[in-house]
Amino acid sequence: MTAVPVAPPRTTFHPLTVARVDRLTDDAAAVTFVVPPDLEGAFAFVPGQAVLVRRVVDGVEHRRHYSICAAAGAPLRIGVREVPDGLFSRWLVRDLRPGDLVEVAPPTGSFRADPEAGERHLCIAAGSGITPMLSIATSVLRHPASRVSLVYGNRTTTSVMFAEDLADLKDVHPARLELVHVLSREPRDVDLFTGRLDAERLRALLTSIVPVDVDHVWLCGPFGMLADARAVLADLGVPGDRVHVEHFYVDEPPPPLRHADRVVEGVTSAVDVLLDGRRTTTHVPRDRRILDAVQETRSDLPFACKGGVCGTCRARVVDGEVEMVRNYALEPGEVAQGFVLTCQTVPVSDRVTVDFDV
Image (cartoon, rainbow, N blue to C red):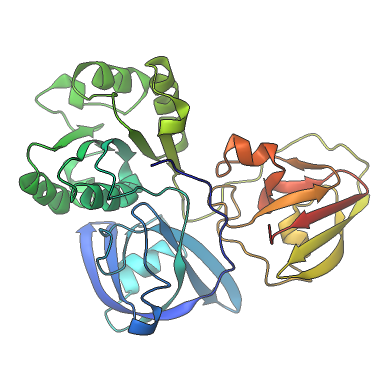
């Protein structure tokens, strides 16, 4: 199975009832939703995908992506780690109760594994990056020919999300699941398992006890770990098309990058946006992101994190020149075809056309 970039569909939210809120650690929980029969098709998910959650606070709409942690075919369930002062995560972890309604959009994302292929998988995760990995591992291990090696980094044993789920999965598949816990702030019996999942430790693990001769590698965690893992895997000869990456999503968008202005302040570009067959023209300052500017006239533009991570605002530039200042979601092939993240893109030429419908 090859992970293929998938354009997010138009975002439609549905009020789903909370079935359970399970405490995982002091600052993390798993939320299970009831999906009504008429929406089961829309909310059918592939292991590794995520859902978009919407909340309106003081009249302002906020959205966040959360990865699905359930096996394919199981009830919809997401894992959430609380971020200090997090607008969304604290609400989901601390305040949500069974019976509450939450607005949720159907699953999306190109980080997706095929549970029917019977392949060999290497999963490397840190912190709440375990959420999509649990979905992938639980689903693919249903095939008797599949094998999974999972390396999971945390601070201490008390911060390990889904510790019981992982232990149970290991008990069910002792010969086909290799589970390695690495703790950065708690000594382990084996020195190799104590410390951060940095390049040095990953190289040691991947050249001693964890095989890299696999069909797919799945990475999810903070940016530094992902960069180190990709570099080490490349050095070890793992083809890039076998490595699939899901970036950490924190509760607030990262701060914008500072970049050199190409134009005099105050100059604008005429930006044509095509969405759902309708064209809208907006004059956008060349130091402002296209998504933010056009949303003032087109509130239906798709978005979520606004940090260049989730890919929800993906569109194709079909005319004109732009600059994308940061990108954690698009593959190089998509960028070569003209796709951009509109939340991270500023116009450069006098006129720009951006198509969300392609």
